[in-house]
Length: 353
Ligand code: NAD
Image 1 (cartoon, helix red, strand yellow):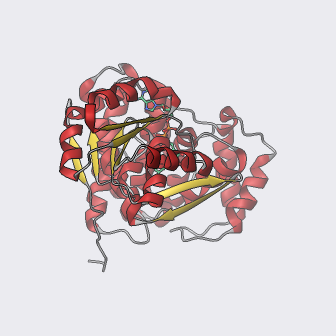
Image 2 (cartoon, protein in one colour):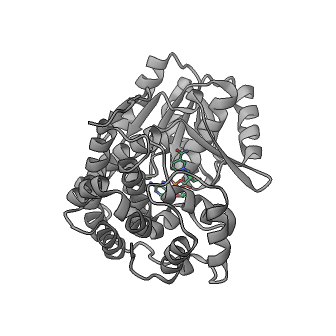
Image 3 (cartoon, helix red, strand yellow):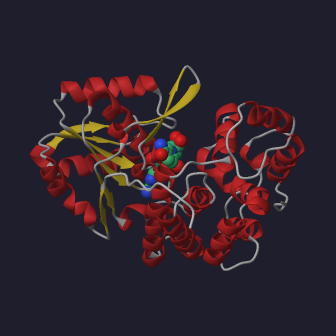
């Protein structure tokens, strides 16, 4: 067996239908008396109802969370939290809201309860990405990790079939990369394999019927496992490329992951035999790249970067940026290989090793 280091990130996970009701108890366990609820403007109504349900234990609602955690929004939220004497944060929403909670916690050390409503997985990591003056930087810090995570399937029923598909593939990407990560270990590999299996099994059912609670619950379980992978293993080509594409061409986060996953898996397959054997088992296939591409098509996720707004002329630019800052990847990055990968993803062609 290979040598490895295994480290767990401390967090309490409460999983199951109806578990949103335990929020007040969870805050009590944390010793919190005045929690500030966070949301995007889009989810402000339901987040306000949640804040109201906390009664005396609520400090109020801040509903200005935005994609990529802009620092000016965080600074405003910190001022609001201080003015309201908040002693805890409740992040209700997807990666954008959970990112805001993390950014406030980094500056104030307030404990966070995360209540995820997408499959992005940020709640299980100590990673924070923030944007200032158009530049996104990423850091890891223990203060950023939510202390408690409540997964309640009923909160995901309002996610549309399309957003569920892209968010689910975004989650699967964390697990696929964890299987071949430089710092992979046997425990995370077990979690990754089951995360891929759970999501691959659930997403077609959700595409058919977004109200299918059994499929939703399985997807949320898979998203939790994939979030653990993102928090515990280093990421490689897939996440770096998506970062370049999102940051430089303003492409949407989950959709970009959804398009790229099949292509990055296929690119790395020749150098990651053990990882691909496990992913293949989870996907019940003998070709991981092809199976992921078929899955994306089947569940109605986008399969071409051109459909997300990227223009053909940007393929060369993206290749240059992707190769500029070298990073570890199981298969060496060549200019022709990466250019062809991006070109295929741009055009919507099937993946190729
Ligand atoms: P999001 O949080 O931006 O949500 C997208 C939209 O969907 C928002 O308007 C939101 O209010 C809405 N929404 C969320 N849940 C809903 C539901 N159940 N029903 C109806 N509408 C709902 O999207 P996301 O993909 O979850 O998060 C993306 C962001 O998270 C990116 O900025 C990304 O960088 C970050 N992220 C960070 C980490 C990390 O570990 N730091 C991990 C994953 C993602």
